[in-house]
Each structure stands twice: as C-alpha cells, then as structure tokens.
Image (cartoon, rainbow, N blue to C red; front, side, top):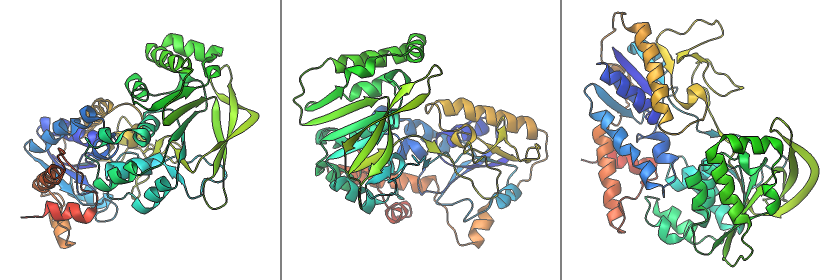
Length: 443
C-alpha cells in the first residue's frame, strides 16, 4: 500500500515506522518546513536527552519507501478528499497544539499569554509571535504561571534559569538575548488542588531547586492533606516523592536568592486585573472535596504581576471536514478508525497521537498508540487492492508546490549546526520560515 501520514511529530513517525516495517510506502506530509513536531518545538531546549530522541526518529526517513513532504499544509495546499483519492490510506497525526483558555475576566489584557505561545517562542517555532512575547517579557518583573504540569515547570525554569545554562541550548539568539535582559525576579506557580494532585514528574520538579540564587518558597499550609490527597499520595510513589520534595522546600526558613519561585496550592485565578495590561492576578483559595475536586472558598488574595502564563493543557483543532469532537477536542475514532456520527468508520481514514486520544502521556506513549492504529489499518485494508500511483506528486506539481524532502531537512540541519558553531554551540535553531526554506533549497 501507499499511505499518507499527516504530521511529522513522534506519533506520525512511529506510525510511519510501523507501516514501513510491514513493507508499505509512506509519504509523511508536514505543514512546517521541518519534521519532529513537539520534540523540536515543545520539549524544553535545556532538556538535551529528551530532545535527542529526534536522532532516533530521523532514522525513519532512511527506511525504504518513506518520503518527507514538508512545507505542505493539509486543508490548504491539499484537501483530505484529495489525499484519500491518491492514497490507499491516510493517517492523521497532527497533534494538539492550541492552548486551553482560563475563561476569566481580564484574560485578553496585554501580558496574558498561553504557555503554548511562550514555548513556541523559546523553541524557535516559525509561527511564534516574537513582538508580543518579547514585549510581555520586557515589561515583567513578577510572573504568574497557572498550572502544575511539566509544561508549567518548564516555563518557570526557563524564566529563572541562569544564562550559562541556556547558552548551552539550541535556542535562537534573539531568545537568549531577551531572556538575558529580562528583569523577571519572581515567578508564582498556581495549582488549584494540593501538591498530591500536581502532574509534574520528579526530575522536572527537582530541577526548580537546583539553581544558585533562586529560592523555592512554599507555604507550610500547602502540605496539609485532606483525605483525597492523602489517598492519592499513598497509592502513587511518584506523587509521594514529589510531596517530599515540596515538604523539604517548605521547611527552608532563610531565603536570600535574588530570584524566587513561589508555589501556591489550593489556589486558582479568578480575575486578571489591569487597565490596559496585566497588573495583578486575583486568586481564590480552594478546598478539596471527597472526590478530589477543587471548590472555591470565596477567600481571595492578589498577586502583583505584569505577566500571566496559562499552562492548563493543550487542545486539538479540526481539519477540513473530518469529524471532530468539540467537547474533547479530538477526532472521534474506534481504535484509530475515524468515526462520523453515522457510526460507520470512514474507509481509509485513521488517526493517531494526541489528536486521537488527547494530550496525555510521554513521547514514548505515542509509539504504542501509533502501532494500535496501524494494526487497525492493516486489518481493514490488508486484502484490499492497492491504488498504486505516485501519491500527491502530480497534484502538488500542478499547484506549483515543491515540498521539502529529507535532503532538504539535512541541509537545514547542516545550516543550524554551522550557525551554532559561530557561537561555540552545537546548534542554533533557524526560527523563520524564510530562513528554513532558504536553507532547505540551498544548493
């Protein structure tokens, strides 16, 4: 068979690997000029070992019958219907890249941004809004980060990390310059429930306390556990370790650092205050009921801040006329088979990764998820006659679209390494679409 995989992130490349291993040809269609999705544009640049998984993912493009078609946007340059006509099957793996809103007053003020936008900026995503993000950072000395997952921890760490740590990353130079000149000295992290309900990993959490000159401040009252939190902590050793780390921080009496990270639990934002831009965040204290849900108490306090970063989850978006569950923000499916309201799967159309199941799990979770989708595809279409042909080559040529292939990515890769070498770094990310396209097509 000849299969189109839409999206060159981990789930797409794991699906491609499974299909190629079964002897099928795969065109990996990617909107951006480069592959690797959130491995390149979501994993924090100072987490070198996690980002290095792209070296493994890259090997998928070396398998027989696998092609990269980057710089092609499905739904704009080519439709889903055209893909279904050209291929035996189409697997949608374009992820969940949009943020979730807080839906509180003042969220539209200047200085209120999504973690997804901030992460895209410091990772060098071509779509990042440099002007808005850099203006927000330049105006801030105090920041509120809403959320207690790994992305919230990443954002917090990047905002207070010493320059020498960030200088070892592949961040674009303008990002390093903006962070180096930042006056941010206080970051307040809000979790609406107890420390036992935070979803960060132990390694990510522990890193917050490893910087010289940065104090981690926790209110001792945050460690008071109601029955639901105690039960959760007792049933999960990772949670117990995390709570132990936070308890140790809460016992530090002396705070002498020039910067500080304040961890607030049982606290949720209810209003962002300011005239034209963020000036403070009103926070309501919560209590936890028997089911573990956060219930507002009516007691509030204000945190002075010029920047608020919401990190309360990613969400998927629809593509073309493919069925979409707007409540869960995923494509409805049955074991990877795209499922419309009729209940009868659309022949040849499949889904994998976050747009299939929602933003959950780690990078490796996508491998098992993609394999399950491919298993459904092979079961459904294994005995079907194949369409043959050259995929969408003729269609793109007729529209004057020249996709970037794997050789184009290799030229981008070389250009980024060469740019990094000018500042004694392994790599510097090319951050604009024009620069990426120019490097890809350089002879």
